[in-house]
Image 1 (cartoon, rainbow, N blue to C red):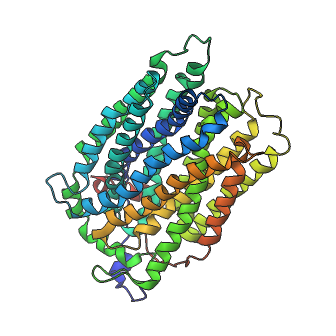
Image 2 (cartoon, rainbow, N blue to C red):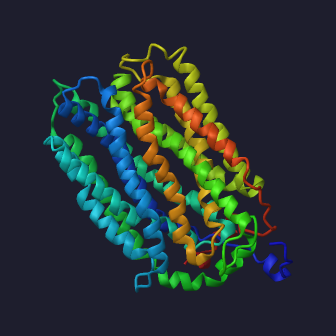
Length: 475
């Protein structure tokens, strides 16, 4: 890592191909579109089905079952993500090593997804859970290779900024899903006496629209990103980028991973596990918090998601810039601290000014502010944490290390719905326990992350402004 580079290598600026990264972002557009609809609607579907099946009227009593089913989906993902990552690393085809998995996974997901609300509508809980499982399995076939495309085609010094762009594309997908959720309101479907009560299309159309947009995003990706051709064109630039890696020790193409890099990887994955415990825990139950705890319209939660998304997009823009100034470690640390403070404010407000919010029928305005700050903070984390992981591997193992990154997040998402659902069964706990749980998990994440080595990169040049948009470089 400390070897002196030649003046030519040091002087030559890296160029981020914005057009290419934007097009790769269509893959992430489809991913977040699907998961936004899935996470917003499926926990409530499961709550209603379990209440009917068990003859229970208190929704708190079935949240642990909801958590178990949501966790089983994530358990499948935990197993499959590393498998599909390693398989795609080794795949050679005329379409490339990632594209076959993206196309097959997208098609099966798009076909199966609309059957989830259909089975719910006809009170077939077994069919609904089977469809959820099919969607999760094939989404994992799609997700890992789709995310790995970015580091496949981007030199290491540019990956935080590139990751910011594909995350913004993903959040645009999430925005579409949320906007659809504001038009087709789940709480209206559930409310007896409403003209939308048990109107199948109220819950079916969001899933059909999500499937259609997923297919369109995959077609755009397939038609514009010629994987094998770009890999050959980028070969020398990617090799040069290795000289500027933010790894504890130099990454070797062959041979075992160094002890220092292995320690850095484990610490990142452990910290990631805890921040997903926090973020996914409250994300899974936020729709139910709105419907069952506040008695408010799900439209309010959709607005809240959009507010958080705006904060996230601002964070994605800032994340790459901050990382180039203060390094990825301290950018992630800042994001975790900011998000932790937002949860802490929510805890304080829950036991003071928001104490009477339960059953009020309104969505408290302070939560919108909390969600904005939380979104901003977590986007600083997400935009830099994935590049930190793939920074530690040679180019031939990007899919495998992408699998490690998502395996950690899915392990958290397997445990956290069950853990949080069970904790809400404790007398005195209810949905108001959400921010307490999230605060504890995020504090643990921050404590682990502080032990990660702060790596100083070699000084390199990156094209900026109009120079970075040189037309010939974008083709």
